[in-house]
Length: 255
Image 1: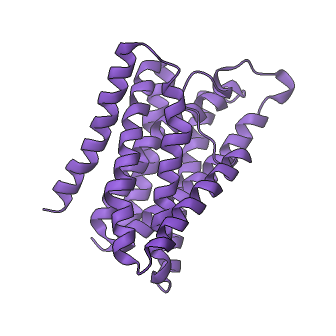
Image 2: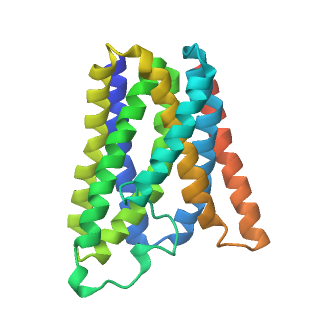
């Protein structure tokens, strides 16, 4: 397959698959499954960022400090976006999705989450495109890592929509439409980056920053709410499994 087709297939299947899996989890209320998936997603995100994306960015640049500076700037950018409620995640029991709905605010939180989720999906598409433009193997690993953390995020979004007064069918449809922003971001980035290959290392650094930020600032704090030894061991094993899966994919796609 050519690079554009890889981007289209990865963006489309990743977005739709994430939403359908999230709907399955949310409708069956398998909270433990979601908690386990969060731990796995942390490992996948950190593994992709440190073992694949950053090494590739450093390989493509002539300035290590420029790449590290982009990572630092990216972390600050994503912190700011989250503060503005545009980079919204909900993976655990203590968030808006699990709190009582105020009647006169029906639909408002759902609308906000859709704006944030659509923006997030668009950026994911740009990240996937930048990774595939650098290397197809890198693109595959990046897409898998994004899908891994999208599923628990979409579960949270799905629950927020239900709590905001939307029906199950409406929540599913809105999430599916929002997921198409990944495809749009990927295709637009592919054409935009054709003449701007020099910024690909910076985009990869920003991609790594987004994965590091989501894993460390957003997902890991939720794990600390489960403090038993059994929960901790399970989390460590699943994080290691997430990292191992990235290594396994690297080995498979490089053959």
